[in-house]
Image (cartoon, rainbow over all chains, first blue to last red; front, side, top):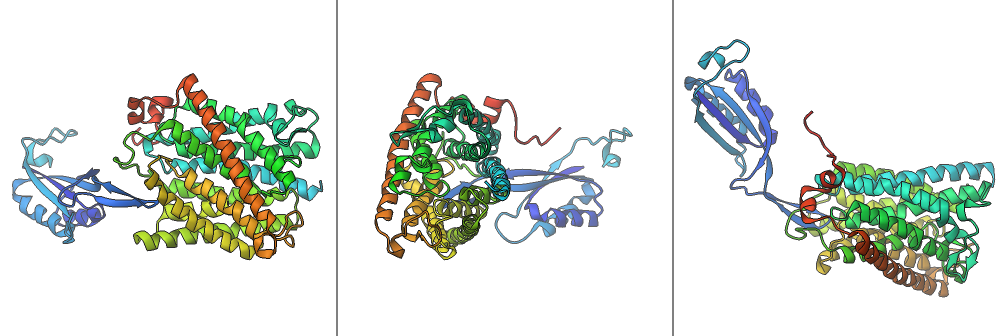
Length: 112
Length: 398
């Protein structure tokens, strides 16, 4: 089992959600976060004063998947989140030791 | 007073009162989210402070029997004998006395102690405001008697508040991290709602200052609308050309700058003159706000750039565009054959600036000696909402 964490542009969330549903993903978590990568922030101007805002709004999507689904899910996110512009984000894949569905007590891949 | 006038002045008084919570939102949106409640409170609480000060003694000092053209006497202490029409005039003027110190609060945002603000506002509403109001609004005040005109408070409200803001900023010093850390407005939607409320209330402020439901009130209402709209256009065009983007904050700032600029002349100039005054207010206040960074003082929300600069523009341009054919109680300005009146307007601006700067700076030093002006560094970093009020503006989870 793997945990896939994707950092994407906030306005791409709906596209990514639809793409994930399209490849059979049944659940995900999302969070509004701030951060910077190579895009390294943006400039905002208020009453003529320029502010360098280092942390820009991003959306983090987390999906736990079975090993066999990893490539499909990663490709779905990649395809849906890409604009080609700087700041499209990153996808990270982590190993998962255990998954447990609290209501039923199921463990492992059945709980995903 | 006719029934129509009474109805209009009661309505106008409520409109002007509404400007202060509007101002609270206008300013509240421009501070960081950790200081939003403190910003709102500095405005909202001023309503309470000044209502008491004005009722007990302030009104008498402003409009009591003249003493040397400088200040009113104590004959209306505790509103003694102030009844009927005079009582209506008293409450209308009270709303101006409230919003004027509230305007100052934008300059000291995010760092001034609440206790210091309460003390400063009390003293300022007790001493500075009534004196300047007497000079320009009372029949025997030296400026009014000399021939200076201030229709709704360019001198008394905007220059007065703008200069006091400058004095207080000098006494207080800049915010921690000013110029190095980003200090962005946290909610421009709040600022825009506040601007709308200010604009709405300003019809009471300016058209109410006709003190009658008559043609002068109508003229003031129309010039107010025109100047505000034109100045918002001017500000946005100026920033669009300079930085390449039209901004929401620019439109809001421009509208307020136009409202300020037309205030001294609303009932004295024609609608066409209001277009020129609005243009000047928008462009010049935009310029003044942009100059701030050259001087390096931290007038946090540009009270000087908008209210002092706009007040000066409006008061001086009244000396240019005043028309006795619009209002028989004003002499003609430069453009219509006058001359002396223009000089008087300039002298009045300088006199109010000099008096209010010195008086406000002294009051600030007194408050500093008594309770201190600033929160400590940790409180400033944590935010004034939690450290001074033990409240949060935005609770995002239950």
